Length: 142
Image (cartoon, rainbow, N blue to C red; front, top):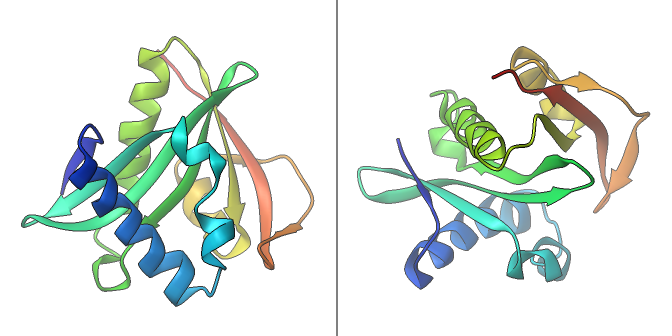
């Protein structure tokens, strides 16, 4: 998978397409909750396989850490380590910006995935868009 840091309108639309497929259509998150005000200022990423957008995520910086958000892979492309590749790319960008901590709110169904990447749960369960989540963090090494 080729991961692109979004720079063009088409790349941005490709990232939004993947997010809509996963979160709005598959998980039934209302589009007005999925697409929010943070999209205007976040760094966006899109992953392509054979020229087709299949993965997406966004990254924001806040309170001394990189906040990884909206990480998703189209259903037909899961199980091929695309999510792991996306996470590693965003972690390297966090370090580029001289931060050494990553934070995310994980759907509880994906908690074990993030644990395999070194993330540690730091919160109780909470609901976001009606879906159970937990907050997780990872210290990024040089």
